[in-house]
Figure 1: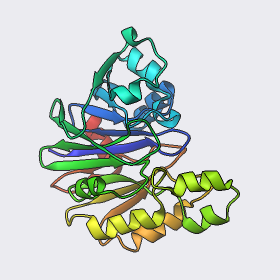
Figure 2 (figure 1 turned 135 degrees about the vertical axis):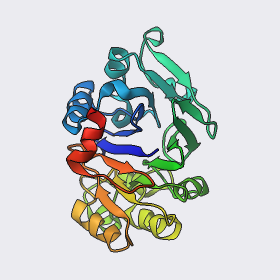
Figure 3 (figure 1 turned 60 degrees about the vertical axis):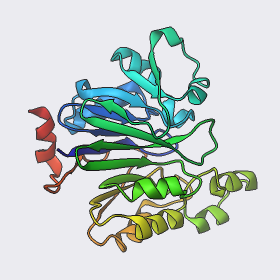
Length: 270
């Protein structure tokens, strides 16, 4: 059994990642509006009824802004840590908040979601892997460094959403104030193209089929630049740059290869 994945949006203006099989799915972060989630999933042929849970990586607005309406409208459980939850200004009685613990798997139907700690300037930040059968997909964004935790989980993934936030020269020569440049490039900020590429080259498994480059900076990166950088080192891995303005295609990750385009969407509509 394989997994279907798509980025519904990726960037400082909102992050939302879909991972699921033919029966159930989860969203990792909801940093875009409920209306946009609905519109983009409909365009992709994805049924929102298959979403069984939302997992939250940390409390920054671009990862949580869509939670209140989406979770309430569809009565979805929200998996979150106590440290992250304390930053959400919500009436807790109206929502299903469930605490997850790092490295302890959460079972959602045939999906196994595992969180692990990462370095980022948030109260209790985590990344996630989602496994179905023998297939594992990782969602790795908002990373200060490529720590041992990240390396270990990345090396097990058949596909991954991986942050490539900024180009070093563009950040250094750009107009951001010094304190912000330091925050972005520090050990609790974001992963650069160079750092992400080193992780990809040195630690990707032989069976990795897809890499979705995620959370690109609007001002300090360029989609064409980062695509060329990674595609030159792809060695058969399909490289996709996730947009900060629209959804990607849906990609099927499985033992029998990849089904792209309309044929893949029809699998969800049957």
